[in-house]
Structures are given as structure tokens and as C-alpha cells.
Length: 200
Image (cartoon, rainbow, N blue to C red; front, side, top):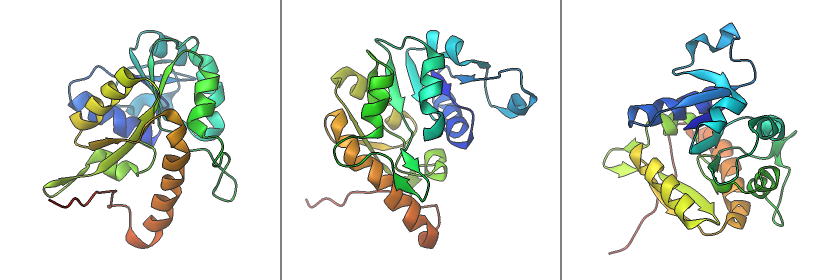
């Protein structure tokens, strides 16, 4: 598993996946930079980390997503989890109802099996998605069924309840959910998550 980006989201997810028994490497632009000394795992170049991984997780800012994917090289055939949010200045989405950031990521990484996931909640929930007996819901979508199966298993491994919403175009709905979560966190704090109430 390659985590592209070693910020708070990337290191939180990487730590959780490693705790669940997965081999995790981090891909960054300058692996020898002392600022990466506290990263909880091996730090490689973006290209090297991506080349040796079966699953690649994009956790950069939206502004850095394209350059990171270009640095990663050929990702054809790999599962690419897009955890980014296409948010621009003024906290508005750069992609709307006729396109999504995930679909743009797919165009930047031709042949990759892109799955949108881990974007609509904060890192506090990624660190601990359990709320008593309940698990936080993780929305995900993608066009490749085996890739979605793999991401669902990864999400369950770290405590989430994965919920698939269909093809990758459904990211057009999942990405705005991130703005709902961010907006709500201003009044609710950051220790809350999505959940589903079901009738018997």
C-alpha cells in the first residue's frame, strides 16, 4: 500500500492500515526532508512507493493532486483510492453536478481502478470510526467491482461500515458531503460521523 502524501490525513490512514496488518509506505516529493522524520512508516519517492504497491491512496490537497499523480507514473491496473476533495478558494467545489474530482483523478491516472473513499469525514473519525457499538459509515463509489470490494475490505479492517453508492460518477454526491461534514464540524466539533438508521 502506498500513501501519496504524508500530511495529517495520509499519516492517520497509514497508521490505521498498518495497525490492521497492511504493509504501508509513504510517497512524498522529498523523502530525505527532515520534516518527514515523524512519519509512521517508510518514506520513499512518490514514483517508487506507487510502483511497488497494489493499492495507492491519494491523500494530497486538491491543488497538489495532479502533480502527485504525474510523479507517480503509470498506475494502470492498480487500485487508486481518491481521498481528496476538489475544494477551491472560498470553500467551494471546483467540480459540480456534471463532473467530480474523482472523475478528474481517473482522467489523470488512465487505467487505474479509481475508488472514491475516505474523503467525507475528518481524520479524527479515520483514527477511530467506532461510536460505542456503532461504526461510522464510509461512502464509496467506483466503476470496478473488484476494486470496490478491496476498498470495502480495507475500510472494514479499520472499523468503518463501508457503503457503496455505485459507479464513480456518484462521487458527484459524495464530494459535496465533505462540505456538509466540514460545515457541521464548526458547530458539532469533529468527533461525529455519518450513520444509517434502519427499520427492522
